Image (cartoon, rainbow, N blue to C red; front, side):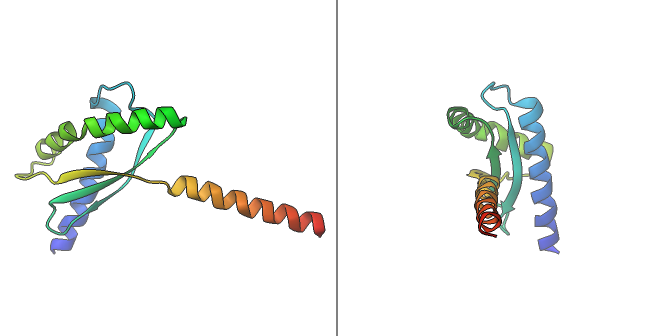
Length: 119
C-alpha cells in the first residue's frame, strides 16, 4: 500500500515540475528542458529529479544553474500543489541517457558501414 502511494507521488511530482518549468519559472535560461523521471525515497523525504537539458554546452550550463536556483521555489510549489505537510528535498540529476543512446547508435552505424564496405 505504501509503495503505491510513493508511485503516485512520483508521478505527481514529475507532472508538477514539468508544468512549473513550462508555465511558472520565469527565468529565460530555462528552455528546452525535459523532466524524464523522478525517484522518491520510501519515506518521501528526498526526490531525485532527472532532467535532460538540450542545446549548446553553454546553454546547458546556464539552464542547469537556473534550475538549481529554482529548486526552493519548486519545492514550495510542490508542497502547495500536492498538499503535502512536508515537501521532499529536491535534487537535480542530469539524465544523459539520450546522449548515451546517440553515442551507441553512432557506434552501431560505423560498424554497419564497415561490414557493408568489407561485405
